[in-house]
Length: 74
Image (cartoon, rainbow, N blue to C red; front, side, top):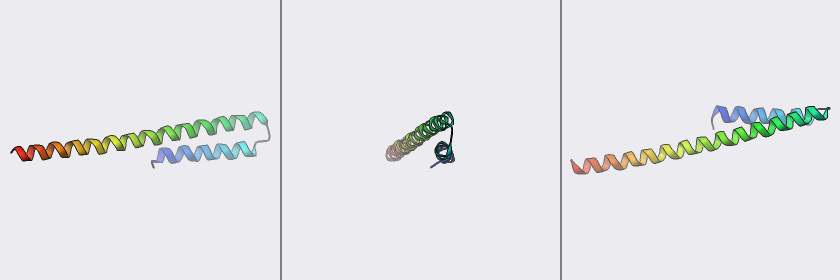
């Protein structure tokens, strides 16, 4: 996992604690909205990282196939 993902999860966890400890309803609601936003960002970050890795693996596979085909023809 990336530092960005870990940071976003840490912020979401901190917002959850803040919401739990809040005595004012508006402060609690703000912290809950913050938690939801941070967790959403973390999920998007994770998905993006997975897609990048998938693309990297596919690119390496294609490059290996091309290199193998060029060696056979020379």
